[in-house]
Length: 140
Image (tube, rainbow, N blue to C red):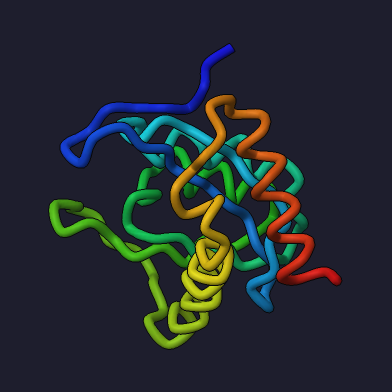
């Protein structure tokens, strides 16, 4: 089993990918190594996407395949475009302001020192700790 530890310039680290609702409460988590790209993880997180939802993500998720996947589920992507993109469709900076709820969710989870420093060696134990921290911070 892969332990979701990747080596990047900052050393060994883990990325936490999250799906949250409109209020910034976490719904699903996914772990990858710190050197893994963000875009391939989008399809796994967005499997249970509801029709009519608006998906806000950062520039790392700006890919035609992700946009098509979101639109095929009946949802609307609101993802800023990378600087090197030739075709730029519609994007609402006004609606994108609400995405800071996701960043606040990550900050709130990382208030738990166990999450911020990843004390667990195994990825499944670390993911369980993330779920417990999310449960305490948002759902209790």
